[in-house]
Image 1: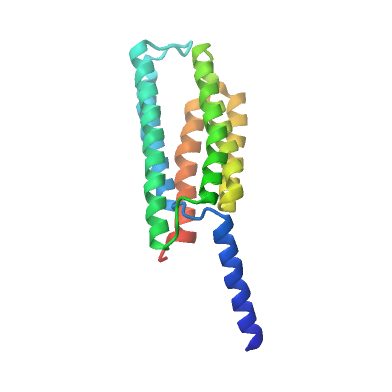
Image 2 (image 1 turned 60 degrees about the horizontal axis):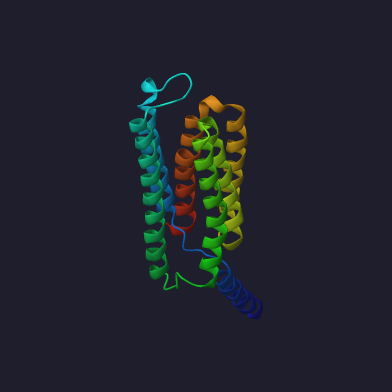
Length: 202
């Protein structure tokens, strides 16, 4: 009985230490929705494929549509992640905005913003085919960097994105398919896994 009591106390201390050093309010549902947004956005771009030339150039209206679609996907994904993280934290009676969450966001956003700016430079130089692998690579780096302050599975997802980005750099013409699989399918599977493991019936 004494051993069981000490074991329970140790587990409680371990749980408290994990909560104080990890951002654990990420929601699996937000991952599923982010993947859904990405697939819808990719579907919009895919529907324009007949109007794209063999040199992968498009007119200003098509370019504007792609940019707006990408921005909407990003904004919706971020907004959904924030909303569901707040809801999960409140349900668990935890504080969302603290030192750990700030470190998580900083480690996530620095590679992400860097990759976004690099993608804009590539677009301005006409290197459209490199945009997809670059966004996959830098997003993967963002996940790996931020995973230090969150779930370990986040790092594994980051490695998947990095591998996809490297493979995409070898097959430039298939960027949209790699992008759909990464940001769409992988996000949905990851979100479902997170929900079943950490959120379901909790």
